[in-house]
Image (cartoon, rainbow, N blue to C red; front, side, top):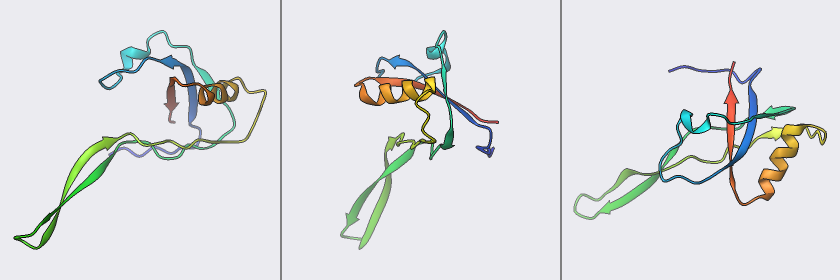
Length: 108
């Protein structure tokens, strides 16, 4: 397991992406133009979680717990507001749009 500090990390926003039925891979971002989002205060949590599926077994008087569907979650980014920052302007525009956008996080 590798642990990364978020001190010095950078977050970038790219263009709108078309939805896929499979996970994105690095090659999907070839040629992407990135805008750094400035004045990041917090990056929130990243990574998948699994839903819990429960089944109450009457014969064994036990609740069984199984791993369910995966959820990529929501990464809550906190910024010091800078209306002149190109990355923050792009981030605000992306929030108002109906499309999904590319993001890149670079850890130190």
